[in-house]
Amino acid sequence: MDAPTNSWILVLEDDEDDLTLTVRALKRVAAGVRVEVASDGEEALRVLARDDLPTLVLMDAHMPKVSGLDLLQAVKGHPRLSRIPFVVFSSSIAPQEVRELQDEGATEIVTKPLDFSDYETSLKQVVDRFLM
Image (cartoon, rainbow, N blue to C red; front, side):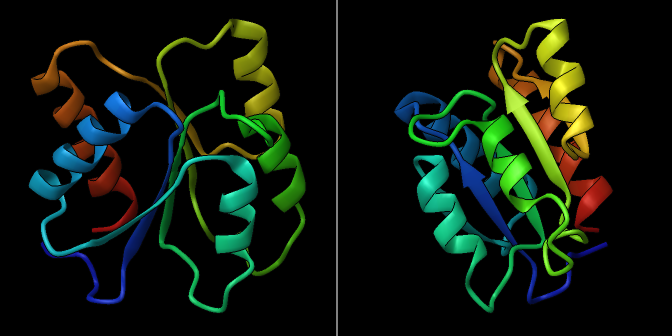
């Protein structure tokens, strides 16, 4: 099954290596789906203020300027943004932080695998759940 043609993913990632891996994996598991990148939470908020909203936000929990938690708090309660799944895809998250992210509206929290094949599989599962 293919994603709707107007589907697109906003990736929030400040680490260049993780960003490269994520975009590379998304090109393989979500071919044809537009991917836009924001390197910090402030940039993400500017993207989320546009008329053209993403179908999925895939975000790191630890970003400069505006953290993942702060971003979720900023968008919480906005009717235009409430339909968008915010999936936290992060390398390390403490149990308390998981609870806080969930309380602020994270749709799902996924730990980034170290192996690229597992990384790709994790992203495919997210894409299949939220875009297909």
